[in-house]
Amino acid sequence: MFAVSFNRDGDKMKNVMVCVTQQKTCDRLIRYGHDFLGDQKGELFIIHVAHYQIKFLGNSKEGEALEYLYEKALEYGANLTVVRSNDVLETLEDLVTKNKITHVILGESGEAETRSSVVEKLRERVSGKAELIVIPS
Image (cartoon, rainbow, N blue to C red; front, side):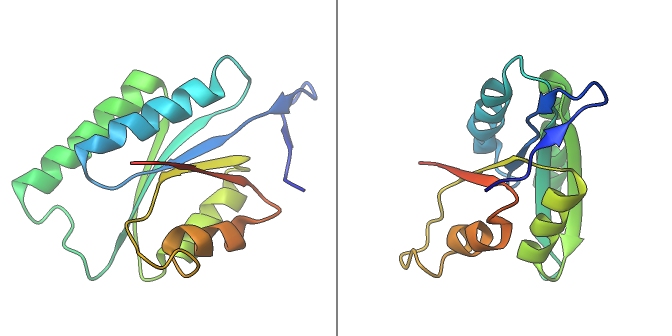
């Protein structure tokens, strides 16, 4: 069972959240999210959550990556959210609820143990709220 959003006219909406890192390779995830939304009513959200312990915009490459994400958001008509958090999973779950997200798109984890991976932990947290779609690397 997943949450369903409706617009003011009572039409079903699909709100898609694409979780990205600062890597420029995230374009394929954003493009997938855009294509997945297609012509359906709803919004595309690009989300980057950085842990407080990780340097953020501490060098020019990080600044370039943020500018790149901003340009992609403009290109695809998406909402861009970049936040810092001590609990990345909790923040993502909060954003799913706040933005009435129906589908979460992210790349597969590089972790060897899949049951305890970030992807599986997020899947558990958003279960019943949104469908998690994992795109292979």
